[in-house]
Amino acid sequence: MVDLLDKFDSIVAQRTALPFEEADPFTVVMDKIISETEAIINGRPTILAGTNNYMGMTFNQEALEAAHKALDDFGTGTTGSRVLNGTYGSHKTLEARIAEFYGVEHCMVFSTGYQANLGMISTLAGKNDYVIIDADSHASIYDGCAMGNATIVRFKHNDVAQLERRLKRLPEDAGKLLVVEGIYSMLGDSAPLKEILELGKEYGCETLVDEAHSMGFCGEKGRGIAEDLGVEHMVDYIVGTFSKSVGTIGGFAVSNHPKFDVLRLVCRPYVFTASLPPSVVASAIASIEAISRAGNRRAHLWENAKMLHGGLKEAGFDLATEKAESPIIAVCLPDIETATHFWENLLKEGVYVNMAVPPATPVGYNLMRVSICAQHTTEQVQEIITRFINTAKKINLKLGNA
Ligand SMILES: Cc1ncc(COP(=O)(O)O)c(C=O)c1O
Image (cartoon, rainbow, N blue to C red):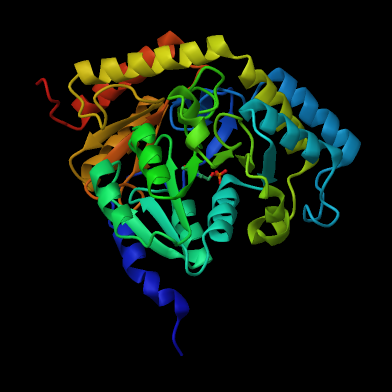
């Protein structure tokens, strides 16, 4: 008899070969969450610098109160799909608020951002269609492509010239969906969205932009990179998540497409799953409301990101981007073993970041991925920089300016 899990033996072997001593990034446990920026991990007070909690909304007072009230009033869950018993008034209110936030007609809320991409892409781009994606796209985008059965056309990350060569070869009269992200989650770099969308439109594509890592702090109102670059009119669908800037869980898609609502009947990851619990919906409504008037918070987040990028760069770390293009600052390390030592020793120093290595990252990138938060104080950002430098000394990592 074949053991169906045997095919993963090489992955297990690879993982067990990594030289971790006490903690490893795949099994780390947050023993106690003290605030948006601090936790107890392995008994030690730790600065959280790898949570995607960009706008620091997880302890927002209004969101907490709204969630508590919804829990008391409506219970712990809906126990049903949106198209059966799982649509409450608050789900409709949330969709209306998001549509208003984006200044569009339609919004559909999903149970996660993963399902929003899975559902939107697989339903829009089916058999006989083409879906054109950046090679560094998130797994949810790849999985949406696979589920929809369209022909996948990949172009090199952010390579506009290659995108045009690919588009030129596609049949003029075929259905085409061009999908990109606003900010890429691993390297923290932004897409040349204007050029990409112009090409998409020139070659007859519908366009979908995933703003998972740009909503909340990019653009004047916090709608994302498309708003920031003034190109929202060229985007047919925006997908986003509540699991980052919004500080809870869930996903959404917005659009002005007049036929948008048919998706509620045919989009399987929307139809065949339970809807979000009322407490989550209530906190998302409050949080998005807070984000829409959070100009100061946004400004502080960008100050933090620039300070962190500048401090690490000055210390001689090899960074994935020339300047802070987002609150994600990715520190590149030479190999996976060094990444392993660095991550574990940085945690001992009291800083939690994400260790990100292939296949989660583009080939050759072994990263300490830092995501900074609007609630980090200037002192905490300085501490993160100091502790990065201490860790580099401890493991004898040669820095660029040494
Ligand atoms: C670019 C991108 N899209 C979508 C998602 C999925 O979001 P969620 O956590 O809501 O499932 C993620 C999550 O990391 C992401 O990075």
